[in-house]
Image (cartoon, rainbow, N blue to C red; front, side, top):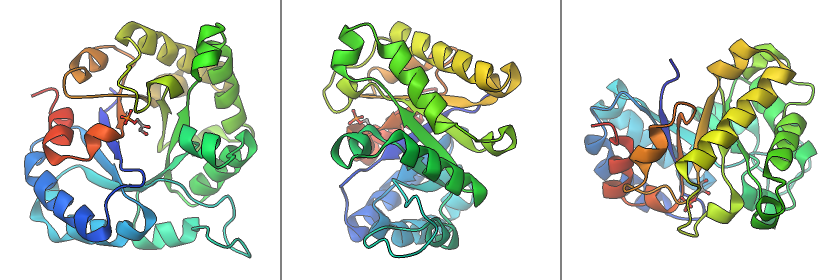
Length: 256
Ligand code: 13P
């Protein structure tokens, strides 16, 4: 059974003190869930959020984990402004989001850098949430399946099966991010099956069936149940609705 993962990507939101206040409101609201709860603050808020989780008795016994939104494709060296996997590991960060469409779109993140980051994170046993997804023009041209399969193949190029543990994929159609437009649960399910088939062809059925595939793109308290009812949707990667404790806890507790 794949565990359900509800992950909040805070993007460029919340200062360290706002992040701590948010954690203090959120933790009591999600203390009874068996779902895995992930929050991804900005780099500078990571230490404060990790400390807030550590200080709370609730987080000790619960399923709250902290992820980074990105990391450098290099371990160290002359790369001004970048953040190393080694620093994330030392802080106690559990995983990292790699290849988010905003990084691909606004910061020229290429398939090869996504591949390098995925390999580097897994080399250091950092979990990865790999983001893939087509844009509107690609969907309208009937190319969504092809685009997503190519992103998956490129991200996993040269990645041994043994490294795929602690890895999840988030299918985030670019046209659904922050727009209020969600993929229908049937369309999302179809793409998740397509991603699983792509992985089965690269590796094997067991690996493809064991990997969690999250959906992202305008997930809200009023549409999460329908999405999560699909057998191949194993969780959600949430932007806007992850910023308020009431909304995010409603997403985490969708099955209550
Ligand atoms: P929204 O939930 O705001 O559409 O953002 C989705 C997303 O990009 C999560 O990574």
